Image 1 (cartoon, helix red, strand yellow):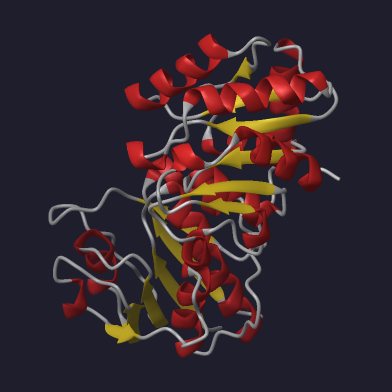
Image 2: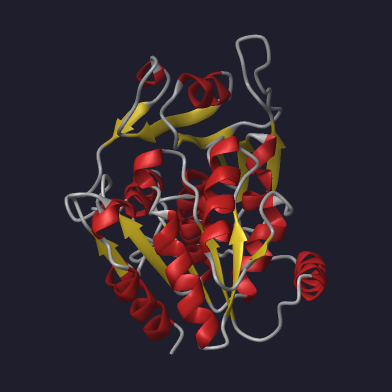
Length: 310
């Protein structure tokens, strides 16, 4: 049985974008066994991928490095940082290959795989690493779906928040301030959706920045949206986005979850380019304004959402 090791520890969106590499290995070696090393905070993403057979949850350091009993046919570093590199350093593998963009000495532990000239999106570039060792894939597939028990939990949480019928998941936060759309713009879209009897559900992490962004949006809304900010596990977030009608957000983790699930995703982009990091396969639903997100008008976003929802 062919055995493969994938090291991709973080973060949320990047882990999602790496999943097709595992699917490509399964396509090339249907009876293979895939082990994935991941930060415990993002393990829920990998748990929802049907291509992964075994998950090792670890926060690696020079004092805490995973050990493996079996030998691997190949070990793939899909992150290119020291923390991901040391996870394959001790593995016995016939080949060790890595994503082309590497830092912190990660190049010392694996062969660099340059992306195919046609691979513009980061997802396709991760797949290129899997192709190097025999993976097969023309267009990325994620094999990504929520767990039934998480869907049940989310339906209960939505009912408790008064959400029935169509709803849009909205992420007003982002890792960088320059990736966040104006709170008043989000509020305008939420109010416009409410007039169409479409509810909005705010999501985000527990960081001060995410909480502040959501509070500002709620303060400016005429029709208050529901908020599950910080109230879902990663797996529950997957379930929430899966049963939603659409997702609205910037270049952030939940946008990539929506893309992996096939949920319509309207993306807002400025400092990052959609052709590399848009919701995969949905670049036609992205609004890109290099001069700044503030230039993107709520009316345009609202129309994109209505079109996405059919």
